[in-house]
Length: 292
Length: 252
Image (cartoon, rainbow over all chains, first blue to last red; front, side, top):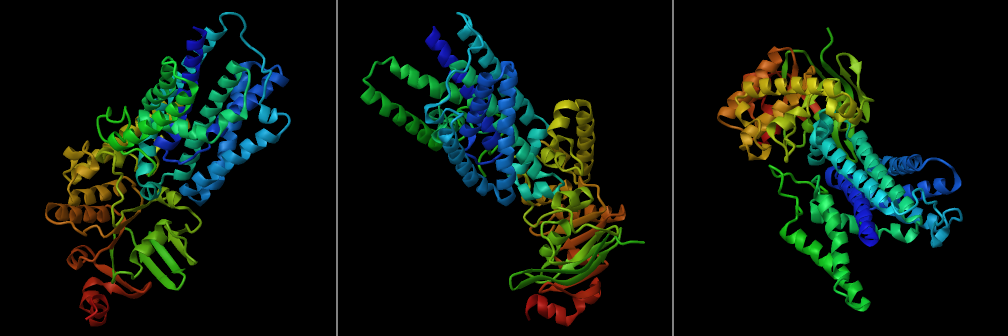
C-alpha cells in the first residue's frame, strides 16, 4: 500500500510538472529545457528553509515557488529580449550551470544531496495525507491552467503563438505576456519541488538533470501538447508503465534498457501516428498547438 | 488643424539599401491617401516605420501632433494606429470572431490579474467587443461566418477579415497594405465600400495598392514612391498620367 501511495504521490508531482511545462511550451510556445531546475529551486529552497528555520511548511513551499518564479523571470527577461530561439539555448545553459552550482555548494549538500529535511507529518497517516495533498495540488494546477487558457487570456495566448507580429501590432504586449506565462509555469514547477522535498525528506541533484525535461516533454507530447488534460494522461502512463513492467519480474539487465526502448518507441509512434497526442483531437476544432 | 499623421525627414537604411529617404508625408482626417510605386520602393517599409515595426534612423513621426518615435509597436496601436498586412497574418487556428475579439485597442484578456480578479469588467468588455465585432462583420456581410475557422474562408473574405480585425481598433489612423491583391467580385466591392465609409467617419486612411483603378476610385490624392523617396505628391489623375512615373513603374 505504501508503495502504491508513493507512486501516486510521484504521479501527482509529475502531473504538476507536466501541466506547467505544457503551459509554457504547449500554450505559450516558449521552448525551454530548464523546467527541472525550477523544480530543483523549489525543492532546495523549501528544504533548506525547513531545516534551518521554523517557518510553517506551506510558507516554505510558497517561498520556494517564488524563488523559482524570480529565477525564471531573470532567465526569460534576458533571453526573450534577443529572440524566442535564444531562450532554448539560454535555458540549457541556465539548467546546466545552476545544477553544477548546486552540486558544488556546501550548504546544498553538494553532489550527495540535501538530507535531513524534517518530517512535518508523522505516524501511519503520513503517506495517505501526502497523497491527498499531492492529488489536490495536482487537480488544482490542472484546473487552474485550464481556466486560464479557456477564457480571454487563452485566446490572447493562441493569437500570440499564431502570429506574434500581427498580435503586437493590435496593441498587445506580447513580451510581458510571455514573461508572465513563463513565470507562472516555472513557479508551479517550484511548488512541485517543495512537495517533493517534504515527502521524500531528501533531495539529490541527480533528480533534476536536464534529461528530466525530456521525460516531462514526453509526457506532454504523449498526452497532447496544448490540451488541458493531456499532461495528466501522459504523466500517469509514463510513470505507471515502468511500474507495471516490474511486475513481470524481468532481470535488471533487461529491465533498464526495456524502459528506455519503450519510451523512445512510444514517442516515435505518437509523433508519426498521432502528433496531437492522446487528448489531441478531443477539442471541437483543430488547433495547432506547438513550438511554432 | 494638425494632420492625423505627419512624418518629418524620415530616414531608414539597411546597410546599403535605402528604404526611406527624407520622407515627409501628411494625412488628414477623412482623407484616403494612395501610396503607389514599384516593388521595393519602400511603401511597406514606410508602414512599418509609422506603425513601429521598424525604428527610423532619423526623423520624426507625429500622430495628431504628438511625436511617437519612442513608442514601441504595441503602444502605437493603443494610440490609434491600425494596420493590415500584405500577407494578412491572420490567427490561423482561431475563428473569425476570435480573431476580432483580441483586436480592440484595449483588451482586458491581456492581463492575468484582470482575468483572475476582475470578472465583471472582463465580461462587460467582452460583451462590448463582441457587439463591435458583429457590427463590423455585418457591414461586410460576413456575420454568418463569425464562428468559422478563419482559414476555411475563401481568400477574398480572409482579406476582409484582415481589414475587420484592424477596424476593431477605433483609432484615428488606418494603414492598408495591398488590401485588393487577389481580391475580386463581391469582396472587392465590399472592401471599397468599407474603406470609403471609414474615411467618411473621419479616419485618416493610407492605402498601398498596385490596383490603379482602386486608387483612382477611392483617393483624391496620392503619393508616388521609388527607392525610398517620395517623387511626387498630388492629385491621383496627375500622377497616373505622368509619363516619367509610368516609366518608373512599368519600366517601359
